[in-house]
Every structure is written in structure tokens, then in C-alpha cells.
Image 1 (cartoon, rainbow, N blue to C red):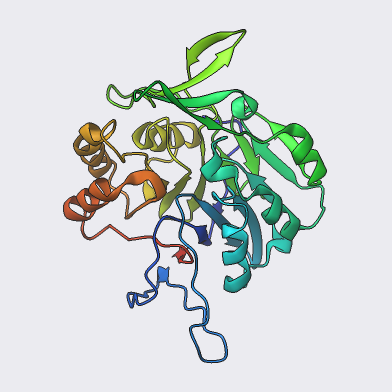
Image 2: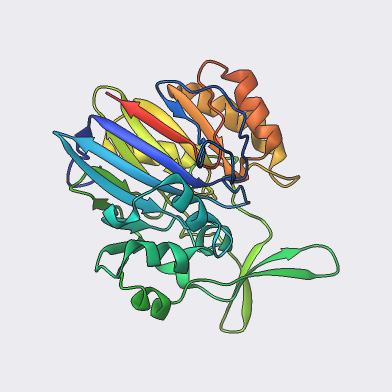
Length: 319
């Protein structure tokens, strides 16, 4: 368990600036779900953009005070920033920034989103191996490599952010948000990304993506809210680690990318859903790289808990 307690909060809002899906005609608003309706002068003149990437603005509220954090930056240079603009997201209120891991679908919008923050010396928390390079996916087709272009420390300094590198948990926003740091791989089925590699001293090595992490919050009397980027460490490993280090067993919501898309991961969909059902969160909100088959399986097996996320959707959890 971490040294200090994760403070409980009365309200948590997660506004998705970028996700893989958008449906402008959705009519399923509720106390938890608010869909984006970017009307201008009474017309639909623009749509929220969906891309293979993830970015969110997270707010915690307690005792009349609201704290704000930016989680990841999305894929393209301007996608998440464009959505932030049409959604009216006030990024000048952001007090901390977290990067889930150093892949392009989470770092691509860094420059434009940090411009919207303003040049303020706010903490930017990452795992040290975010800067590992070269990193790539080794695809078994004509020995093809798909390269990642990681953020540079100089790029972060130029944005005016205060870099905090940690493989250990870090408390943020007056101890209302916990950066989990490096997540232990304990399950027997979540084995990482088999085609991920990197070069070190001229040698090719398998990349365990140690920088993959998540954030967690504690909703008063309701339990943990866990937000992942891709969950390369495994979403079950991630949630169980959050419970272990906070000492809080109850889970209110699990949201984010679960990385179950494609033939390399479809074989563990069933086991992942089975284990998540045992964890029994009040809400399960698979996003981004979870994949269509896995999302459908979560909806089928956990229908009363499942929520479909989209670009521009705001989730509101209240104690």
C-alpha cells in the first residue's frame, strides 16, 4: 500500500477529447453519460473528430473545489485540440498532466494541446522508459517495422512543463489522483505486446512497455475509478494493482483502452471479461484499442454495467 491515502472525492468527470468512435445522433444521455452536441448557431456545422487515439480531461471535485488533469494527447497533431476547442474545454484550468505511455496514438497531439495549457510550470508525470528509442512493432510481414516517435525531454521543456519521471506511484491534485507508475504483470494470461521491440546497445530486445500506466481516483463511498490509456500491462493487472496499493477493494468504474483488438489479443478476450466480471465494477467503459469484438463481449456479458464511450463524451460519477 502506498504511504499516503488516496483522498476520496465527491465527483469525478472524465471528458474524452479523443477516442476511436463518434455517433452524433446518439440519444442515450443519462446522469452518467453526456454526449457531445456541438451546435453552432442552431446548426451542426462541425463534428467531433474520432481517431485511433486517446486523450481526456479529468476533474475531481470535493468540498466545493475542482481540480483538473490532462491525460494523454491523442494521435494526430490537431485532433484532440480541435475537439477541445469545439467542446469548450478550458485547458487553462489544468494543474497536472499524465502520459499513459510513449506510443504515438497517445503523444501525437502534444504540441497543440500543451499550447492550450499556456506556458505554466505544471507537473508532467511519466514513467522513465517513455523516452526509450528506437521503439517499434516488428510485424511478421516482409520483416516490416512500424516505428514509434517518442516525445523528447527538450520538447517537454519547450512546452513549459515540469517533467516528473517515476516508476513508482505519484499523488497529484492534492492527493485526489494517483499515477500508478509501473504495473506488475501477475495474471497468467496478460503477457504484453509480443511484436513490440526496441534497440539497446545495438541489440534488439522485446519491449515490455514498462511505461504503460493508468490513473486512479477514489469516489466517496463508491470505490475506485480507474482510467487507462492502452493497458499494455493488462487491464486486470492494472485494476488489481490499483486495489492493492490503495487498499480499496471496491471498484466503481473501469475506463480506457484495454488493448484486446486484433488476432494477437482476441484469444484473451474471454478470460479478461471473466476476470473483470469477478472484479465487478459498477461501470465498464472500454475505449480506444479495446476492439470491436471485446467491446461487444463486455456489453453482452456485463450489460447493466457497460457504457459505450465516444469522442466528446463526458462521464460524470457522483458520490
